[in-house]
Image (tube, rainbow, N blue to C red; front, top):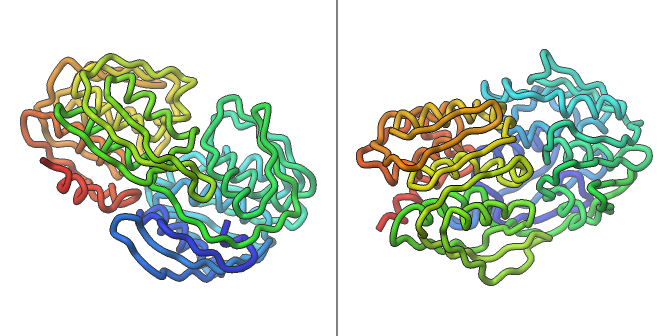
Length: 402
């Protein structure tokens, strides 16, 4: 938003993770001036971003490398669709395996030329200054695809509408509003009208609830534990994780709620409780899609977890269902796979073992949380993948040990 806005924005609390660093590099390659003005060990980076206004990005001199970040790649596609130059977006080996036709197809309908080999990166975007608005319903619920279409719609002729059968996270809609954009929401659809200009803002980013989920689960899993997490985002499209952990039996208090740059935020106090059996139905999956690996880890401490309607896990940074099952079984868990989900039987205590995160940050951290309840040691290969979203994860884990 800051890159597309008119003026200079300040951002406090920007993530130190690799995915967010990829976003900065790509925007800088497109001519955006970004300066780091501070770094807080607890809250992240402070940035100033000088926006280039509508359609103000410049043609890059080389490929845009999104690293491991599907969010970076898909949302940049929407922005670049309205710019009259050719850009190639690529990423690491994991990102180059992920499906992108779901975002290329609507942008092509709008008038951009968007192509890829077998629907996977590298992607080539040749934008247009005469995009047409569309009425679009994604086949698979995806906040990233929704965001790409809405960002393209800011510069399209007419009103672009995205219809959702299942609601997905709404950070883009909230951010557009904060930066002065007009967004219409209701009846399961989100709409923007083309020709809008965003205005620079001073914003502060609350803590990521998907990262906080690992500490919530650790506290819920281990008897006698209590963890307090301050300044965490409590966007209602993201707090499904709280409901699920409560159903497992943990005690969660929400304190001091307020608003941070259009996002609800507050503090959480999480305490251990006797773990129970839990089932997550398809309608709940979009709200907890990123937290499913660590919820599976929670089930290895007791209770059980059955998930269905989560086939999207098969096309994340890894095949998260297969890789999760392989790792937890190596640690001694009993886990059944299904095409669209899994069942973790929590009656058996883990023994520990050698596991491979397969380049997936969420699996690296989920295996670590599962290992806290094992009778023996666990070695996590490729654990450095955690730096994609949470470079401080293992040092924070060490600091929380009693």
